[in-house]
Image (tube, rainbow, N blue to C red; front, side):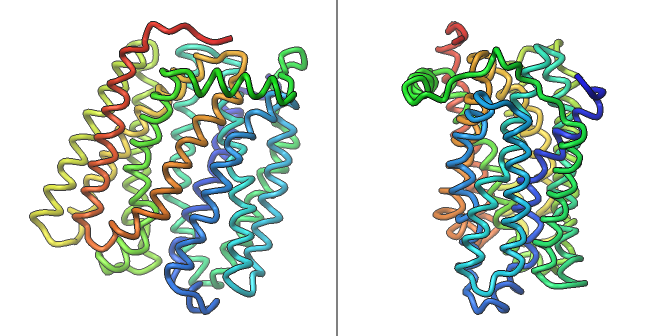
Length: 398
């Protein structure tokens, strides 16, 4: 390692934060973007879909390319593309150009999250890896809180285009830091071939591995239970709770505090509870929050603070489970950690993209339907995870 572990964790967290910043920072600007570009609210909402679909597709490749060419090189290339695509969004004269810029952002923004996760497993194992991932998650959790707040104030000071200029500057700063300090963690002798036949065999092994697929799907479904509130935030906060674009902190700050608490607890439990027991505890926390959310939505009108209170509790449970689910899955493919990380992220993003495009616009008309959507996705995630018990005896794949 060329840098201390704490600084390494900070760099990995900053890389992972690119994705949340790309999604959350511009949410307060949706009404202003529609007005300036002469677009409908649905067309502006579709900028998320145009972002998420390439994001999910490239999740299959970020880790795979890093397995072949090294972690550092792929991260630097992804940051450079994200910086350029953010500038394209900033100068977009019409909604179609913005869709293109968002698609290019989606192609590049996931590189830090996917490759960074593989880098952790390159250098650490077991409880040490879980603790480092928990540190990364604590720092990463700040991004969803500060990004919509920054977006709201940038919108007030400049306009929506200033938000994308900020994203370009943010990526440029991380690019410079990674160029100077990010080490290469994958030795040349451990790199994998990009030969199509080798890749096909690797994907066949991974996608045919029942335990891996169930772990990835359980994580994707439970995360999406949380993500539908992120996507629906402009409607949930502005229409239902009658807040301004500068008031997004009311929802995002408590959520992030919950995520930080869950990540901290995950680190404290590392080596004390098994991954499985920790994940079951996390599902219990999420179920408690989801049930309370449904009851509140049934019995009370939308308002503060009761409409917000269940969300940070749910975020705590989600952050408690994620490092454990990810490590369980990555341990199954020690020679293909980049590919495994890519596949997990691609599955999660596909679920989120389909939900964003097809379900969230149907759910956001009421707080009750949003709460019901959260409960359904959580229940599906729990059922899938419980089914992994039948595969616990399967060995790792080299």
